[in-house]
Length: 395
Image (tube, rainbow, N blue to C red; front, side, top):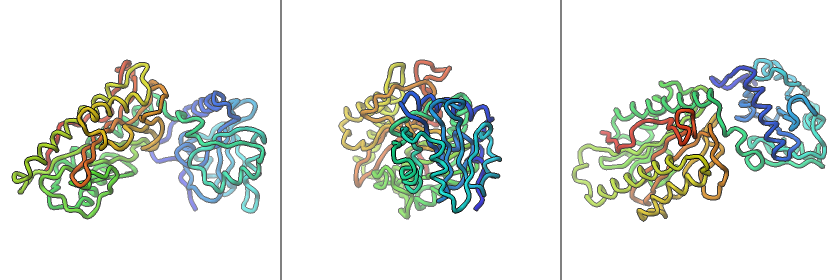
């Protein structure tokens, strides 16, 4: 099986990856850990630029809490047959490499690099097969998940990462502008989803993760996937779409109104409620963005958006958190949710996406990615999506 040496479009210089590993070691020390253990997935790509396929063969980056020089160097345990792929990755310079052959006990090979009594955070993407193997090899060690032990490890973005996220956001905005020009009425949700997929790729996305098209009553399901429903005049349609461009994520949601034959005869009460709910969500989204200010916590963003919706009488119909982090994946810490008291730090990038979902009727969601406290807005947030929040109509 061949592997990709690096995530497409995600490469940086070797010094960037080395600095990330140094920062990770500091996070581990602060958390009272002996180190971090990183399996193939977004974390391994982030720290090395190496993105092999995830298989039953163990590949593992070890980052000691003492840093890259003492008490041990960061190392990669890799199958011998994949050593060449590892060497082609942009961020593996300076790493010790430990290889193992088929038939060896790869977990024992990894265990020899670790403190047998240490506490380690394990990347969330680690297979149970490998975690259980490490537990067997190191019965005195303790293991916890990255999300629990070092939840903001990748949450604060540097200038180069923000630039990539901004480019991904601009590409998603361009895809939205394109989809406003296509026909909705009389077509299936999945037909419009295919248009969105194509437009995202046309604007540079190498990977499309989701194109949700939720028309009419289906809009009341926040994660309804595009299906066979034929879109009708008078429908509100929730469009939630994103993926990776240059290795960094886009994720935006807009809600549009379908015009056309039959729309003029729509139930006036329904039309009035659609516009009322849309305006409430628009104001709630603005309140969430405005809540990003020095001293604010993640839950403050959720509270600000939720307060607007509660005051309008729709609190029971806002059924999810207000936002999530984004970076080399489209969902990652931090999370804008009640109970998350972590302070918002400069460089954190996350969504602000309140919604209202009325079962059997329709739904509305508006979502932008924002970056907290950038140099040009040191006391607030800058939107990385800039398409209009006015209710757009489509044919």
